[in-house]
Structures are given as C-alpha cells and as structure tokens.
Amino acid sequence: MNILVTGANGFVGKNLIAELKNRGFNNIFEFTRESDSSLLEKYTKECNFVFHLAGVNRPKDDKEFMEGNFGFTTKLLELLKKHGNESSVLVTSSIQAEKDNPYGKSKKAGEDLVFAHSIETGAKALVYRLPNLFGKWSKPNYNTVVATYCHNIARDLDIQVNNPDANLTLCYIDDVLDEFLGALEGKPTIQNNYCVVPITHNIKLGELANLIRGFKESRNNIGIPNMENALTKKLYSTYLSFLPEDKFSYDLKMNSDHRGSFTEFVRTPERGQVSVNVSKPGITKGNHWHHTKNEKFLVVSGEGLIRFRKIDSDEIIEYRVSGDKLQVVDIPTGYTHSIVNVGETDLVTVMWVNECFDPEKPDTYFLEV
Image (cartoon, rainbow, N blue to C red):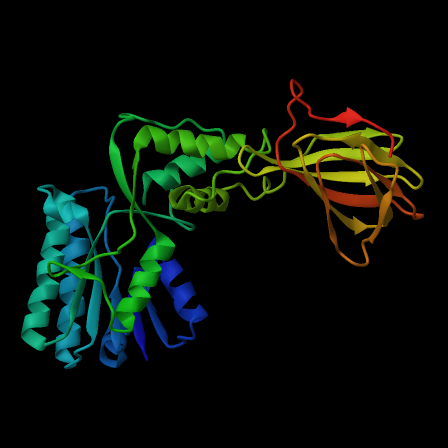
C-alpha cells in the first residue's frame, strides 16, 4: 500500500509515520512544506490512502489560515481527481471548526471540500475534528498548552495560567494513532458523519499546571505519579519527553557509613517504597521486627544470608541468596530478621517495603535473631 502523508514533519505526522513503519508499512510518501511541489503530482497519482495532516494553526497573518487550510486542500483534492484516484482521504480538522473565528472558518472550509470531493468522486471522506492533542514531539508555544507547560516547567521557566478553572478536553497522540490505523484498515469510529478518537480526557487548566509541576517535584521527593490514572500516565510520559538532554539523570541521597550504604529510590503513598542497600563483606544489617510493615528482599549482586526467628521461638530459619540467582524473599511480620554479607564483594540488595518510612511511627523493634 502506498500511503501519502501531508504535514509529515508535524507533530501528528512524525508520530504517525513512526507507527506506520512499526507496523510494516514501508511505502510512505512524506510531503512537507519543504518538499518539491512536483512530488505531489506523483504522490497523488500513486497513493492508495491519504493522511492529510498539513495545516496552519499559528500564522503571522490571519489570511494564512485560509491559504494553508483551504488552499492546499483544494490543490491536493484537484490532483487526486485529475488522476482518477479514489483513495480514502483522512483529514485532521479541529473542534474549532464549529466556531466563528479565522482558524475555525478555514478548517470548516477544508472539511466542506473533502466532503464535496467524496460526493463527486466516491472516495471515502474521513474527517476528524480533533480536540487538544498532546504527546512526544509536540512543540511548545505552538501545538498545545501541554507542550508549553512541560517544556517550561522542565526548564524552571514561568508558565501562564490565565483561568485555572478553564476546562480542557485532551487527546493523547497514541490514542490518535490507534484510531488512525483503524481507519486505514477500514474501521474508523464515526459519529454524526464525523470521525472521532473515542478516548479523550477532561481536566481544568489549573489542575494540569499543578500536575506537571508535581512531575518535576517528584525527583526531589522520589515519588512516582499515580499511573492508575490514564491521563496522569500519558501526561507523565509527555513531560519526560521534554526533559533537557543534559537533565535525564538526577542524584539520590546516599546514607553511607563503614558498613555500606542505604539509598531510597522510590516512595509512593499507595505502593510503599523501594531502596537499595549495599553491605560490605562480613556486615550484618537488620536484627529487628515489625508489627505491620513487611518487606521484599532481592539480592542482585554478591552473596548473602537472610536469617529469621519468630519472636516467641528459638528456631532460626536461614535463606542463602545470591546475585547469580535472582530470588525474592518475603519478610513476614512478627519475625525478627537480618541479612549478612557472607561473600567477598559488596552485597547489593533491592528492598521493597509496603509503606513509606514514618519517623513518628517507625514500627521497627530491635531484637537479635
């Protein structure tokens, strides 16, 4: 299948082409503003499907709206008709097409052209009135407020929140791609003659700003956003794509002494915390028990011995662990326990605990195994 993508260098175009290639589509005609105009003649003759993504949304002069969103669409459809090409045409419009402003009028005019082309030629018209899109490779101060907020907050730049209570309808780029690939396969989602992306999210502008600020702060409090919330998960992925390339890494606080080190990696209120414990050869750590707090130990390097004793018993239970065989050991409540480095190299243990440490209620009681 030969697939024509106009606006191939844009936010949606880049993501779409990457996913088309992921799914094995290799004959992709990429057309951009910089492309030789003669290529459009060839592409419209040979293509089997058209993703018409090209458009103008932030011109210097309002008249460019009509030139970019109506004029180029006219040229594209005329060439398809000239070659007798009845390929389906998927066009990205906007919810702004319902409004009486220069951008909305230009989008509505483009829609009307595509519907008229369909009636005249029999080619299928797939018109998507899209809400605010967000995701990787979007442009700040151009595509979406999400891109602007992510870009600025990641760089400690100010953001404007003019109306915190303003409601936004957002749509994630991966959900758009799933819908577009479904349309390519002949399974678009249609409502009242228009095509729609069935998954959208609503959020207030102020909530959006606070959420993205929280993503930045999570490096300081070693937190993880609530990934059970679909919008939060998608926004966090988008935020990370805007990190400056020299800021991918960040330091953790290592608590070090002659015995080794203990470093908290992740803290979450609903899933507990993860830490990395390093013990020098011969060092024993632990010798305590808990009422409710429970842990999982995973030795990833070195050799260790985990010892248990129920607090009302003299029987000692031992588990030998090694980085050569990754094995999780649960630490039940009511058992005093310790871990000793019995090897000749550092013992590195990943430790998960079901609750974040609270100095006011540590639930940790010293008792030799």
